[in-house]
Amino acid sequence: MPSVDQSHSIAVARAVAAHLDQVGLEESDPDARWLIAAALLHDVGKSVSGLGTYGRVVATVSEALGGSEMGAHWAERSGMTRKVGLYMQYPQLGADLLALAESDERVVAWALEHHLPQEQWTLDKSCALLLQQADDGRLEKT
Image 1 (cartoon, rainbow, N blue to C red):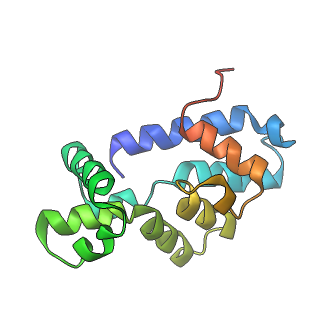
Image 2 (cartoon, rainbow, N blue to C red):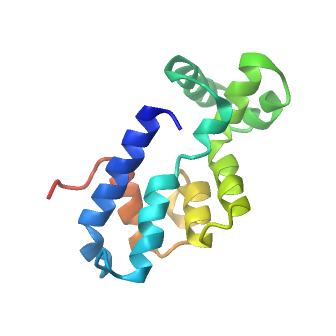
């Protein structure tokens, strides 16, 4: 995982840990472990594409213009087109990697769902909202 992704994931995990009280947990609670793991691993699928910053910008713009359904088609190609297609599918790819590693099913679910609308989340809504706010940098520093 590139250093920029590592830094982001660590920042998200620290924010979640600092605000566990919002979901009635403390760091020592066993249920806090999956939340921290989900925060650390939600973007793991990005590493599959092998794209750097420029390539990620291209992928993001391509998805915005062409629609996310193009990702699967482009991933069947080669070269840069394949990488862009893989990046567009990173939530699914990350969830697949985590499932293969036998991660907690909630960690797998968050990797898959973290960009979906709230009504499509399968996790406890308060936990998912905490993870989303941490990912978006919307939690107050403590």
